Length: 264
Length: 264
Image 1 (tube, rainbow over the protein chains, first blue to last red):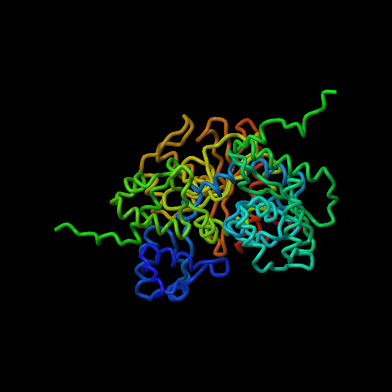
Image 2 (image 1 turned 90 degrees about the horizontal axis):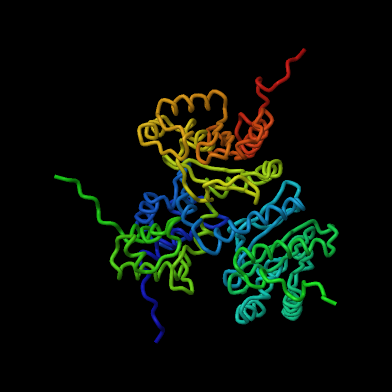
């Protein structure tokens, strides 16, 4: 006998109406909300009325609904996203000034990453990302760092799934990806050249939290022809370490043997 | 006979559980969520279970709930906040680099303002603000701009309410505020000296949307002893105009008579 799921509660239906919005559909009519959330029009109408009253959604002059400012205020209280962003921002500013390129901060959510912050200038190399947007873990610098330090089962899931290609340089076979992840763990950073867009090079380092676990990744995405010697890596590494120190990571507060000068 | 409100739906109760989080309470236990949302523990428990499944809230190792990353992803689709921020960011970066101080972007929500973005460096003058946080309209530079260009009924409501003071310099009587707002409309910018914190000076200009209505305010908040001649104002004004132009404001695209050089 097939197991039966409990019927969705009105709470779940409410969240399904909110979940009808996505990056490709930021403004929706009532009937679009009903269709996308799979709910009857009458139910959707009642939910929409309550969402409007509270401010979770807003109604534009064109009769389309969009995600409301109140939800933005609420989301800003989150621990993993906004709180982390506030701590990382001054460091990200420094990185931006040194390069005028893209400075990105991302966290892992399941088998994908979510961009928490991105600073970018008008002359920075174009990237595909958007704050609050998701991306695959196997291609970008931040993604490779987050995947390399993810639990084994997350790595297995990504390695066993299809690995989308954006350019001919995207790592798209499991064996190469496995080697790339081992290398990230060995050297402590990821370098992704032209794997998402041909003209971009990403250098990413792990950000560690109070228990020294990797909680985020910080990257600098520069033009692919930027000279990327040890200085560029050192800059990103120092920035990630500064954020980790702010988060209370022990490894970022103590001077390790690796960095100490020999006594001789 | 007193009018009776309809009983709150489960949608409203769900939103009340989410609304239990605020800046002073970002991590809450189940019983705190129940108490703050005014709902029975059993109802709260059922709602929390659905919110967790969807990712609207997350459970920390300490048994406390916090606002989830999924809500951040959803909120990032909003029209007034995040979309505006993406457009304004490169311009805000330029302002930041010129000063290493605070660059702020805010919109009006009722009789308060909500900060959409704030760039700040480690040596910037400290301010009381937080991205996603609210503030009164009558004291800050961005607030004075947003209030000056708000509908009359919003101005009336603020003018008739109590005007909180943060420093001896905060405008706190209606007559002075009315004069200050008229001046903002006349000169097209707001200057707020030491009105929220003694050591900060804010210069704010309106950002206009496609119909030329004021949709946001952009400010530079510098140390109070920074020389604030015409150059500083011109920088902020040019930045606000650049954002307005990106939003399609007619007044920011045409060269107006005011700016044109005499023919001879």
